[in-house]
Image (cartoon, each protein chain N blue to C red):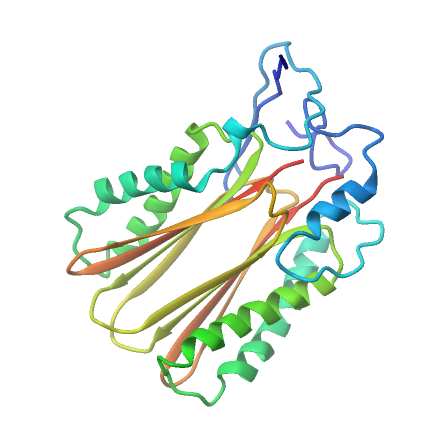
Length: 155
Length: 144
């Protein structure tokens, strides 16, 4: 059972040394694939904050996809750049929010047709602190599905 | 020689099942900040595992709109369970499965991750037959 008090994880058997210097964590995260925002005092984010983060992201994502794909038709030559730019803009926006999460953003763009397309995901994580958000967007010729998985870093 | 009897925590899926197991009375702090090599999320090993699952489940599969939702979910749960069995103790994992009808329509998928590139990794695998295509992406994030 998880302990009460909103702390999502037991630290027994975990990796947390009391004196783990913050800069070690900061340095290793910055090796990630995106320019990190300044992460001052990241704290273990509770679930409602995650939900708020995801909702805000949801709104931003719709605008972001509109900006990239709005009014365009499915074009095999450009699809590479479009998906890359959607994903990069999403990730940059999420990182700028400055929360202590690791993010995974995936985007699938399908030509709109009579043919079926299904996606499912299964996650092995801490349900109290980690979460996901899915945004679906479509126009006349394309369907776009953006998935974001946010995994908390508990310090 | 490090004795690493870490407490093993298994956290359930996004439907909210939770179990916490500990090795009976033996849990000690391991003070490990980085994964042991054997327990790293190694793409080659994981890819073989996923490939085997796909071949087994989808060898004779035909696309049918009624069954596909359950198949997709079942596949993602199966892959996730297989990965759990492989012994990535300190990893949180995300498995995404995409199945579509094979009719020559264009699909493009991209992913970007903001994580610790030292410890975290991902793999993807594609399976195609005459009636469907299936893409599985598995991401592993180290839990500090």
